Image (cartoon, rainbow, N blue to C red; front, side):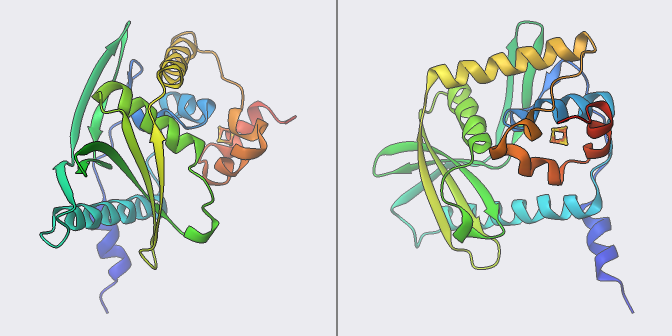
Length: 221
Ligand code: SF4
């Protein structure tokens, strides 16, 4: 019998390239600072199960692009759906190819749309702060100051949409985070276990591949 799990694993497997200090990615903007720090100091390959979750996000994103492109949805015009991106900040860069971002025109107004797949849309009551941070950074660099965060349920395709307005101060704070990350990495200083210090972000630790290391490094919290 053919093992389809294995076929899928092989199909979505990517060549593993560890990240280099000095080159950061917009998707890291809202993550736990310590986790991002570990990912540079102790790079690990993405676990196959996690890779499948990311792949599902890509599939949902491609589906939404098709919806926006469709002749059946003339009320929206898809302007762009992949953004190569590079910004020099002091002595480091923030760069990458932003796949999960879409630029659309709705009633003459241009929006950046970020698609997030969700395992249970009914539990989504507000836009997650870490998703908002990421979108603020995109709006800052791309210069489009209207944003939509769209959560889409993986099993029902139901959506919840949150309009996010650009906030220059918030975008600057995110840039400051990257400056701090760069400083902590280049001086080999371990950041605070940010996510588990706050009630609202503790959930991130459940999906963190550095959980054990983090607890060993700071067990008191
Ligand atoms: S376990 Fe939590 S606090 Fe520690 S690095 Fe991971 S996300 Fe951050």
